[in-house]
Amino acid sequence: MKRTFIAAGLAVVLSAYGSPGKSANTTGNPFLTEFATPFGVPPFDKITLADYKPAFLQGMKEQKQEIDAIVNQRSVPDFENTIVALDQSGKLLKRVSSVFYGQNSVNTNDEMQALSRELSPLLSKHSDDISLNPALFARVKAVYDNQAKFNLDKEQKKLLEETYKDFVRGGANLPAGKQEKLRELNSRISMLQLTFGQNMLKETNAFRLVIDKKEDLSGLPESLVANAAKAAEAAGMEGKWLFTLHNPSVMPFLQYADNRALREKIFNGYINRGNNGNEADNNKVVRELITLRLEKAKLMGYDDYASFVLEDRMAKSSDKVYALLNEVWTPALAKAKEELADINAEIRKEGGNFEAEGWDWRYYFEKAKKAKFDLDENQIRPYLKLDNVRDGAFYVANKLYGITFTPVRNIPLPHPEAQAFECKDKDGTHLGILYFDFFPRASKRGGAWCGTYRSQTYQDGKRLAPVVTIVCNFTQPAEG
Image (cartoon, rainbow, N blue to C red):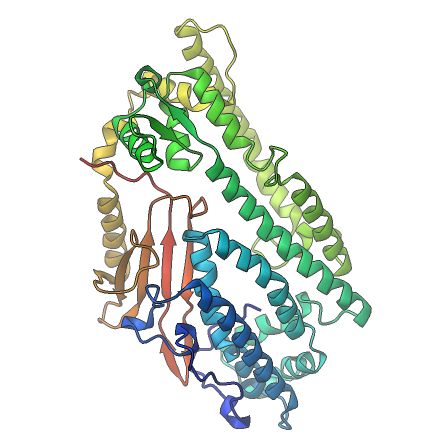
């Protein structure tokens, strides 16, 4: 259960009724003690696959004992002995979860994915055991209903409100029969979401467009050709060129490749991931996921799943989402039609006797952009070297907020390609560690995101700085 809210300046109060379940690390498992590394980052170089499951099991066991201690104490519920204690529970579980799921996204393998499927029902049950614990909710509700007498500051009020809301949205107010059904739904939904992502990665990695004739590379930038040759060599196909469905490969191929048949092949491979009738097909997964999400929403008293999800988001309701989409739709459609006219004009200019298809859009849009604006991305590319762009972002942050970013050497990295920086405030105090992981690989899911290997929190009244990672899938620069 993800309760990683910031309780600024608050002390851990488990000592008031003992600290059960503290780990004695006699196994050498890195997770069972605080990380003895610079800035307390995870010791990625020492963690093995065999370390994860025992740490997860121990972490769930310890948090259960901590929850039991909160519930069984005789003290009248107050903010510290209930809300703070709950927020501070599960430290080991949070520690191993942050690392495991972070690494499972950026450097996974078959064994890790199998373990994530094994853990999914266990973690779903553990989360529900907390959310649906009636005695625990009774204490949380007692604090929530009597919050006026606790003289809480705004951070404490926020933590209390989010904790109470988390229980209600987790089904704490449902009758016992419906809670049991909610458990079943949560477990199955969790597994389906995991399966969908794993299938997408399998499908992305399974597709290969291998080119062995140099003329089929016509139109492609030199850097893309060099990277394709490097990828082919790594796959044991030296002398050929390998293109994949990872965005830095497929997108520029669609944008620049003169060979229309090859553009069509890689485009269809891209849009049909999870739709190939094989073991990684996601059609059944999506249908079941939609059905179960709707069933969960109705069980919780909502008309549909969108209403359930949006209640906790900025938009609040599907009506507001559609209002925004409809507001954008008219000008967006007009712009798309204008671009399509430009694209078809470029097709006619080249003597083509066909209407633009999906695999033509990026290619002819690039030509139309060149014709209308004399703009060529490849001419701009030398000015946007990745390190320069990164340093530019650092410069802006420094000018706006006084934050500095200093490269950190000799620190464990989540992957050998990652970079590490120490962030300091304008007065020189340590703010946290920032990792960058820029380039795609077969063990990494697509897209870009910001994640944490340790969330910012407070322990014994002292701030515990975050360890943050920014993950991207940029084209890796070719040598030279």
